[in-house]
Image (cartoon, rainbow, N blue to C red; front, side):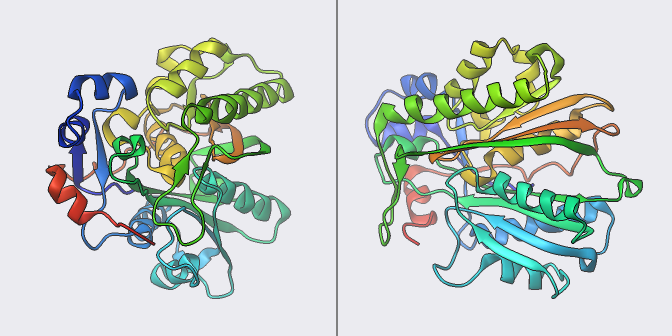
Length: 331
């Protein structure tokens, strides 16, 4: 995974708009969020996460022959991020590459595609990346949560190379629910306020959770680690409680209070945190969410104890004026 070193505290944003800082923190459950550096974009962050994934997997980048990149903030409207990454990471030129966009679940959609390529026998290794420098209109409630980061996952057939976990099942649930959107040519997204809760996030995550638990005949108590998409801290806690999951099951992947919502990278960054701490034979349930709207679920089993990654860079905190000058204002 990759997280920018820059951060801004929720209280700093609230003070800039003359709002109650403590109330802003309490209402969202987010204390601070990441912000991209002056020369960082979704490509540079994806490169850093992808390089770390290849180094951690201890394989040659030329062994990878599929690369799918999910993002809401691709640097170019017409020029594939996946093609640039394939070159920068020295992926084999004879590769399946494409950019994906499905709001915040484009990264997990990439995982599903790579998983299918692997299971079909068409490739030996594939790389799925979720990356975003999330946009928010100044003063909009999204400004408190929209963050930046990337996560990359390598999937393959050969567990002798030291795979961390196995995907046992994946399932998706999709509807046409316009809870969040950004029209062509518009610099910032729009959203339907509380409509983003029900029938957006809660309805889709709820149905996907029900579906995969029923399909695999699992109970919440059978799950060791639950990772949910985290648009804020309140939504995932509410749905976890509704299903009877405990705070301990949510703990390792619950990263939103200190980094914000990294959109397409959010669920995958939560997963990378779990993969560092989980033990052999533990069960992981990952459920992403993308506005528009849909959810992807993965049930996974750890094949060995997790591997700690290098710690992220020491944070550097920004004032609100520095933050506004630094973040991207359009695509």
